[in-house]
Image (tube, rainbow, N blue to C red; front, side):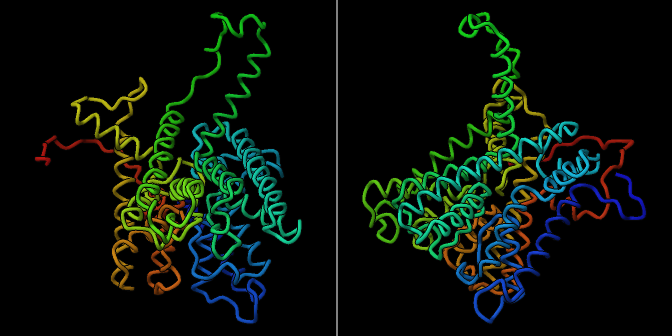
Length: 470
């Protein structure tokens, strides 16, 4: 992309700058005395960390949520909403409302943030995203408000409504931030709250491309059905082929997500069933509910209904892996994303079989995409390993806790074994950097830090030679 006086930047750089700008604004707001209860305000380190955690929809915290006043909670909620929806998408929506037009530059920025494929269809895409966000968050808020009020969790309807809205927003945006000091431990045996929160962050973790495709598919199918005679609806003459088929991205994402949604709870239940500090003290039904919740939450949300720090080390290792993988691309979660994980698995399977190409669902995956998946995975491993080393060296944290904390930050999950508040300034800064990297994506993050564009056209190629592998 051409530069004009060094002012123009590529979309990847502007996405990172936008998030850092939002983090800076949030930090300043949280530094205000009215952001916390009592006369003593937050320090710069805590304000920066909490602003980053909310903006990147992570949920890690250096201070108790009870520290914040109503104003401080609303600041955190606003940061979660803007960060989850995508600040570039918010900007495009505002431009669309104000002028009924989105310029090319705004389209490119939003495309870089939300993973839009068709840049010319961004207006419609943003409309779908806005409607889906409002619908899901509104539904969650309604269900949670009624349950919190009628279940006696809140003293009055106003408090129940506020808590329902807050947790509806943080659940859909996979933030893991709760108004309660024990997160959601008070609801460990409440199926209504647990299932509602679970559905919220699973839907949010699928990714906007998936949600938009499903929404478009339903709309298109209804239009086709309405234009057809009733006799064709169940016969062989039904022109279902006129409706575009499901994309490969949707198939891979849903299949990988379903597999991880099964593996996570099974592993947690297997390793924690007899642990008296976590699931062991619960009845069978509550064990199953808590095992399900703690098995699916690490991929995206970071809510917890049991003490994560008391879990066995095998469980923490599996949860760290789930946090590293994350959820769907262009979603409100971090990590390398389930599609990257699936592509790497398919690549290994194809190599083991001796196949020339990587094929799935009757389609061949392009080589550049496979290289990108490998690059993302290796960059992510380097980030998590580097932060883990910093935490171990600067704070004397053990390997398991350090890996868990860094994976949680990179995956923008928010689960912790309880060491976040006791970490040194260097450790907090490292976590802030990796939270931002996990939110915008490792490739986008590194590209944004590049000093110059890599748009050179090579006039020649070197001769090929194969080193020995393995």
